[in-house]
Amino acid sequence: MTAGFEVKPGDVVRLRKQHPCGASEWQVVRLGTDIGLRCLKCQRYVLLKRSVFEQRLKAIVSSEKGEAP
Ligand SMILES: [Zn+2]
Image (cartoon, rainbow, N blue to C red; front, side, top):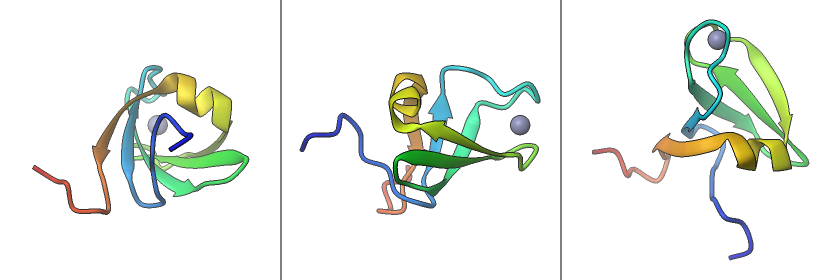
């Protein structure tokens, strides 16, 4: 594995930096050179460069693999 993380569209992630709306959890919408994320609280869509996303990623909250608690 070359990547330090593994996320897929549909996964919910927590970032170190809060969105101005107060939420810090995002749903992964698309993966590529840029990572598309939708804020779970205000539904705002943002694109982050992969390197920026990797720096801000704090935790994967839920995975489509079914690793829910
Ligand atoms: Zn928000």
